[in-house]
Length: 488
Image (cartoon, rainbow, N blue to C red; front, side, top):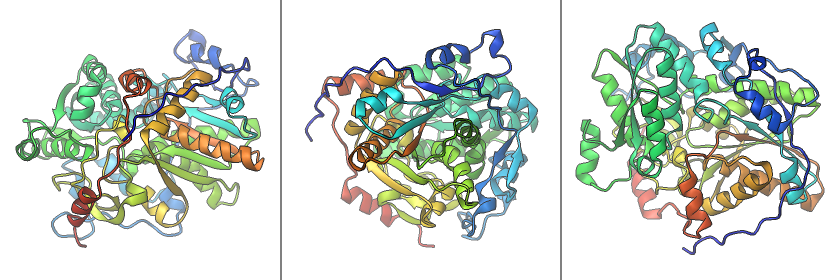
């Protein structure tokens, strides 16, 4: 495929981006958020509090999602079956129908290092596009790890430490989740071991160093450290890895060591539950501005970033208090929602996890090594898959060159260099804003900006040099992987 043409972009105007940033109680002492506030500007002195509860969308759905199944019996999973992998409280959160779950004080205390996160109106980007739409983004890059991932890493680490667990293991794609869990583990005295997808391990060495700085041990995946990894390498010594393979390796270690538990950075209900701090804050921030979104946009790999922003707004829509559209954006090279099937499948490549009803490309599907490593997952969160099937949201797939073009437009107007993953949301928001330019509609567009790209500059270099190409999902590879989906 032809390489992307480097775009010539107009310069931004002098307007100040408006933000609504609630200062945590320690901000007056000079920590973290004030420097960002100085850049973005405080909006009218409005104050937003850190949520005291996480929100569970399952409680408000008219049709409950299908249960996970035992991988051997194909019968609904008993919560106790998960005890090898997770502490009791996280298992309870995984299966609960309660509408709200209290955030422990110890977790809230850590959240105060960076929460609430800013909601910023992208006025310069609006001007560049010449759109009548208003574009807001909820920016999660102010966390210590630089993304939304600590929102769930901190509670997962705390619940494991409270249960007396000594060691936690996990997978990571681009390294955002591995960095977040390494950070959280260091706060609560846990040993942390991470399997990082090989393609990202090679592309992003400073993410590995970040994890190691926080005390984690990091393996490239597939690795020789596990039976699952050795099996993959025997079949393909040059395997670029995938999140499904890395999950298999981490789950194997947790299931065979009594002093070790597994932590997952996306997909499962309790992970999406923790991420709703994003949407709960954003509801309050928009209300203080007198705004309600017409469309909510977020990138999707496993789904936690999108669900974290969208689910509280879905609650409001179900209650008739607002009526936004919801749009998930995925990479064209890994189009789980737009090209996958809705079926029971394993969450990992080796078939060690429970069977989950989700949109899947097949658990053996290994996506091409695009730069948005955090979106290279064969499946989708069962809860997001369920609401997609209910018709509550839509989805689009976008090629990476369009995403990086959008990233440059964003960086050169708003000043933030986005991680490759949220460039998908930016590209979709720009599409929506340009459509508003055609129709004259003054829509309010809300997008999830889930992290910065300071460790992803090699990807930007490749795009700027004209070396980045668009990758697709080969039809024969997709057909073969879908054929292996269990027949339930």
